[in-house]
Length: 182
Image (tube, one colour):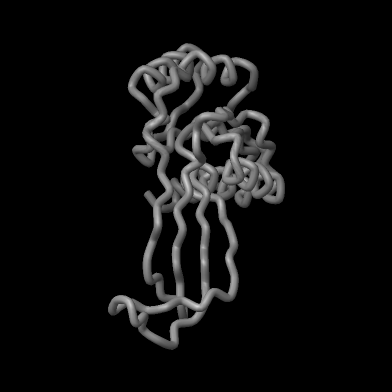
């Protein structure tokens, strides 16, 4: 089975693979801990640096790019600092962000990890309420506008891949003979 999977992954070179799902911006705040807070028995992190990485479906897209594929990422981001940073990181990774769905009333999902000496101390989640947008028609229109060799559904339970949207997408992919991996 391992050989079959590796062979399929090697076949990604040049393939247009859609990635449809939740987009998360991973934020890392790193530093050193040398004391305990006098306010509560918790470590005090003296921050050295902060950096960002693509998470969830955006990370899957980056991995497809690293294997020679051409990822087409479709997901929801806010028109906020997090959404702008996701777009910037996608471009730096060689991924065109033009298929992102942007909403000014939506906050981009951010996961912040506080790290000292390669040990994660705490994770802080900045999760907006689950999206209430009806996106199925917009997503299927985007899929129609591009030619895909395959599609990955990547769900982190943030509300993007709702049943109605998934049903529409699966129907479209079935009608157009596009293989889907979930």
